[in-house]
Length: 419
Image (cartoon, rainbow, N blue to C red):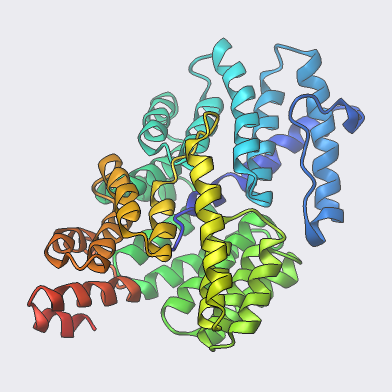
């Protein structure tokens, strides 16, 4: 299931600027001063990279400052951004986002209208799928600084997830007029994609890649998104090329390896796809990678292994969703894994719960429609699939599902046109 995490690229460049501006003026202190939220070790090629060594040094410097100076707001913001970036790199979102919020809340307790603290708190809320809350915090920040491109990007993200697509477009136009860069171009690309303009989406994502620094996580994440656009439009050669470039620029980058796995899947080389997915799974904690692995095992005739992965995911994600310290909403993701497990009632329970939180989102409506289709309740699926198509998306999976639903509800002409 396609994750809508394009707001992930929003912070990377700002993180570097904030942290370096603090760290360059401070003496180096031991990493043993880590405090309550020490850095977790990275995996794979990045574990011993110069980037990782620099991050550890910056972390030690910043932690020493915040532990000895209660009034150093700037260092707290820089530490929070470092934690957020590590969440992206490692996939350990629960741990690092809790750490980031600790220092953001310390700043906001002293300065409730602190712009940067509000924007990063909004970002964390969006990452945790608290979209309405993230929107409210971002709007509060925007009131303090309406000409900041970063906060307009957060408003794009929140409105997209809540299904307010016209508002998202307005915010994206404001953002790119203020700062045409990797963050704004990638958002323009996504909005074009969900409105059915794949050539325009590819054009904008190319601009986003060109605007980034090769090798940075944000740039290579963006390059992977470009590859996925080529995949969706059946240009596997260009897709594979961009995944290879991403791995050249950032060795061991998990999402580029996942892209290679999808290419292998498209070429029906399921054994090779499994190898790629297993490699990526060892590098980063991401449920979607395990789902892709389960799909590959099933297509490779290893259904028992596929079922075992899905059942393990259900157990893990259910515990995460129900844990008293969990701050993440993962209803849509749970609906998807229950659907893969064939437990349609439980899938529908989570899908409708998510629908009640954000009824205008096209992905949520598509999920509800597809679950009803699998339950053979075709008339119930119809209004949801119609809502899922309101942006005129040309995503081939969506069009195929819509065609099947329309065929079952008697509109064979529309079904044929969609296919």
